[in-house]
Amino acid sequence: MVEDLTRDDEYEESSLPIGAIVGTAVTAGVIAYLIRRSRADSAPKTPADVAMNAWDRARGSDIRDRAGSMTRDFMLDRVLPEMKPILLDLMHDVKSLVDQGFKRAEKSIKDL
Image (cartoon, rainbow, N blue to C red; front, side, top):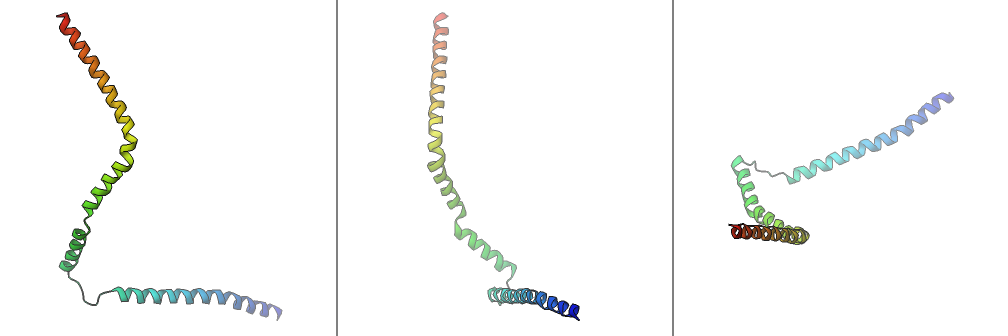
């Protein structure tokens, strides 16, 4: 008889969390269904309508212009300030190599 009471108590304790979980899941499902149904259009769309809407969104968003301006801004703000010393050093090296080349050319011409 004592064993029967403990089994009933265990059953009652474990059924409460399961009921709460099931109730929460059902409520979430109903809310998700209502939200999805409210967002759905009542008139069925043809493939031509879907394509036209997509084309209008793509054309209206100016993706290329925004991407180009963002790339230019990134280059001017971030990359070029970091590359400036490297480019100046590279130009200095090119200048010295060209000067050495001209000196060799002048010497070769004088030796003729």
